[in-house]
Image: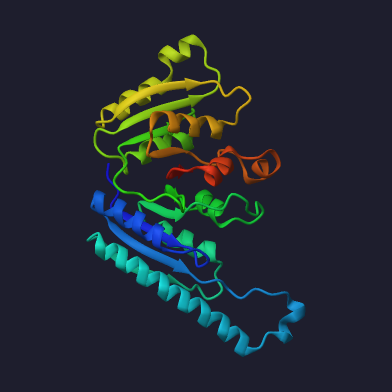
Length: 277
C-alpha cells in the first residue's frame, strides 16, 4: 500500500520553507507526485462598513495576497526540484467559495494531504484544520513547524480503539511507513484479560505484520492523564518518527462541549501526526 499523490497545502500567514522541504522529502522517498496548493482569503467585512471599502483598498488586499502566493510557489518549486520530485502547483481562488471548501475540494484528489500543525491556541468555533480533517475524506498529515522530515518514517505509534477512524488510521499509516518499520499498536484504556489475549487489536497486529511491519501491541491505562498525553509519551519512549490515530470520533457539537482528544494532540504533538476520519 503506497501513496502516489500528495498535496501540500500552504497557509499564507506562515513561512513555507519547512513544510515545502518536509513534503518534498517524504514524497520523494516514497516516489510519489507532489502538488503544492494555496488559496487566498476573501476580503471579509461587516455590511455596515461596505461603503468605506474602496476599490483601491480591495485591490491592494488582493495584490498583497498574490505576492505572497508567488513567494510560496517559488519556495515550493525550489524544494521539490532539489529533491527531484515530480510536482505541480495549484492556486485556489474560488470566486467567493470559502477557503476551507477550496482545500477540501483539492484534498479529495490526493492520497494524503500535508499541512502544517495548527497553533497551540486557536478558535474552536471556526478552525480550518478541523474542518479539513472532518470533511476531506483523506488522511491528513500534520507537520510541526519546528520538525523537518528527513526520510520515510521507519517507526510509528498507532493509537487504536474499536472505531472506524482508528482502523482507517492504522492502514493509512502503511502508505507512509518504510517497509519493515517498527510499529507500536497502542490501546489506551481498561481491557479485561480475555480481551488482551484474544481481542481484535491482536488480529490487527497480525494484519499489519503481513504488510511487512514489525508490530508490538501495547496497552496503557490513562489514569488521570489525557489520552493524547499517553500517546505522545509512548511515542517518546519508543523513539517513534510518526504518530497515527483516528480523528474526531464524536460529533462537532459534542467535541465543542466536552472537548476532543484529537484537538489536544493535533495542537501539541512534536512529531508528524497522521489523522484519519
